[in-house]
Image (cartoon, protein in one colour):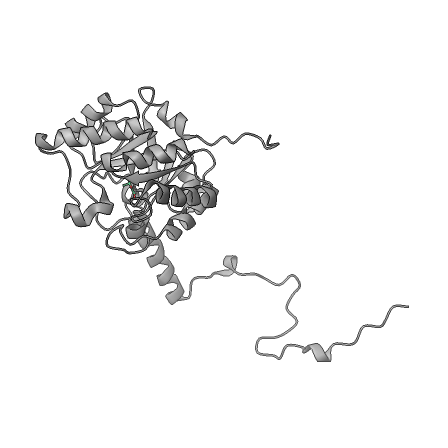
Length: 295
Ligand code: KIV
């Protein structure tokens, strides 16, 4: 038995238990300082592979390596105390087989200390989800628009806007729930379909661009802060952080150029009045008197 006090961090089953009880609030987070702030308000934080595009300048999430997810996952776990931390499995680390997925997901769990992983795909990932959950790894599923498949889908397109697509997407949701996923992200899905799926499955639906009928919501933090240069239609900017950063840096640059920063209050003074006049040579170590040895 451990002698440590039990962690106050939310666990995957507690997120599942919120379905029908209260809306689930979540954001992506990639670093310790934003995780510490979001932790006060969010039920879970997702270290999304969107970090490749948002922070590292990739065009898509496809090139994101596992090591990058682990590095950012560790930072978020260090920053957050209460929220469940979920880390995305990046493209190429889980699709090949359930055992490859287990090896990589176990590495993510061990090296980041996160509480769950997320992977993209509906029916095609059901066996893998079951394999991971049966072996102790909580899995959040992700259906609808799955950005890691961008090269097959042919663009960041909303899903389920024609009724002919509904059966397949709803079946994806049922199958990931039956496989043991503790929640499922619905990305860019027509609002009536997302609402229908939410009523049909026993696990929480977490919407991003899927309307107000889901059990919870997630947004990319940089998008909702107003820090991203372009945002999709479904994003509401709750802040103007990009503009605030621009103003702050402009003010700094102006003051450095004008010589008004740093001012006296930003500088260290001497403990005793300076004995050396400006431009005079500093006393050298060699000119110091040797200490008298103590007897
Ligand atoms: O990578 C990510 O940020 C995500 C969210 C869009 C759900 O998967």
